[in-house]
Length: 93
Image (tube, rainbow, N blue to C red):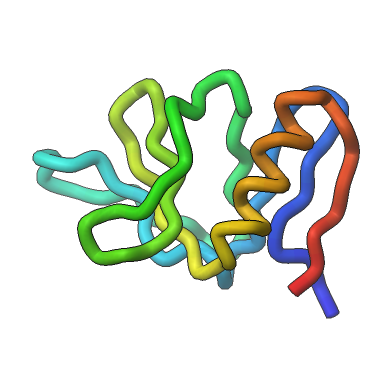
């Protein structure tokens, strides 16, 4: 079984590509596309973790992007906290 979220001591969060629902910037014409590679997020760029208007677990980024994921809220919160603490952790789902 592969990981769904992975954190590093550098404060990065890797999100398994099949778990990403959407990467978009609201009010923008195009959303970002992922090409089968993990999405890498710097924890310092995350404004907060919550649910978007569609009810999906979402990292709201400082640059205005939203990364919606098909993961439990608890797993995303654990990854966010571990990345802030610069702790390496693999969350399997």
